[in-house]
Length: 541
Image (cartoon, rainbow, N blue to C red; front, top):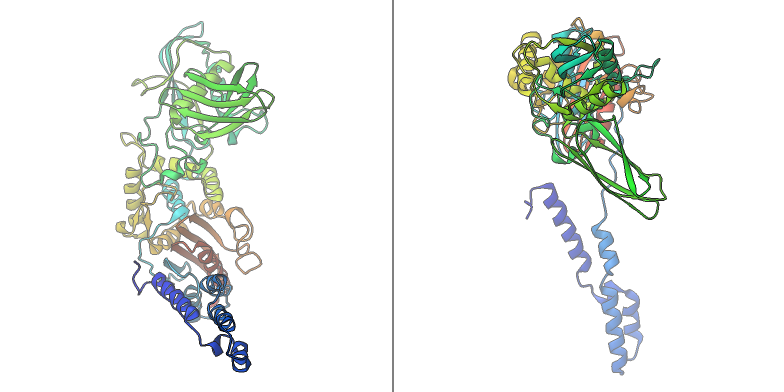
């Protein structure tokens, strides 16, 4: 039973009190004055008349069930819209932001910090040292640690190595190894606009140009640059079937999404994959049935795929997209298929292993520049890009790319460069999807302050959505002083709404801010954030 002091308990007892008041017995005159008048005038000689009169009294006194329900379901009026203000002076700014927050959400926790990048002044705080779930504003931290480590022009390199001698006839007597480096741009979205060539087709073509005509052994995938854990700490199980929660691997392709298409082909079903796969067993358990409908599911095992379901003989088939449960193996099988498309004969299958020490390089494919990867990651809030960049930031000779190592590096970087207390942040992942992540609003504005002076400052700011204009902020703060002015990273989950970035005040003063809300009243929290953002844009000293 809820406590009487809780808001839920108060609402329940108010509802009960209303029901008791409505259902209380009424006197005949209270219940129906007309009945009282009839009783005074009517003769009192007939029992039938008495019974009818009593029935009328009871009916009049007892409210209908419909009426009781309508009273119980009566709700408080909707809260008034939250509007931005035009404060003059820091004292008025603090009062206005406090007023917006006080009228914002009915439950949950807030953390807010606003600082001036010009003077270093702290203009406003509310629970600035409270550790909160950041959602996708965690990508600000991932961007900063990766850019600090590598610089905006850095490129990750996917390598092809050989285990064996390459003969003059183009035969590799041994295995060919695809070694991943956690390249987010190893994906069909980075297809060459002129040639239409995908990155996978490009690296296979480079192998052919290096003189390889036949591989006698296997095609091996090496994902050892990252830890084996494919699902970060704190990811909810309900996320795992969604494209925004793809598995993490140093050897990833097409953001670890696999499209499976099933079509009727006579008495059997034809199955194709995108990307095309080769060298791993595919079990076809799809039945062709009468009609046009189709139902398809994919069972993924460590070394094979099974496609189940039905497809209508008179239909056009069905295409489904699934998250690759074993992305390194799927990427290796896609590489084998791409080699075959280049006319290279492969004797063995596709499997995973670490490349032999000292294996010579056949060719390599560099990624897009890190600055471009950060632009994509923050603009569309791409979790897969964030997870790969986060682990890459920690990776070095002898140090595996893991979330734990990246968290250690991030804390050290923030302490040394931005004076953020190591206890103010815990990064279980790089995307903010984890329920184990914690940051403080103060740490976020300290990070933003350092970033505003870093060599890569323009790259970070240009990657952030713009209020009323682009990406995840294109519909927010439209036609306010923040429109086209405020640049910030958004964050949203079922339990979090957050916003962190930069805005220029009315008199040209540059501000950094962090708004974090943890709770279920997310839409009202976003409305408050938009009002605060526009208020900062309208502020002047």
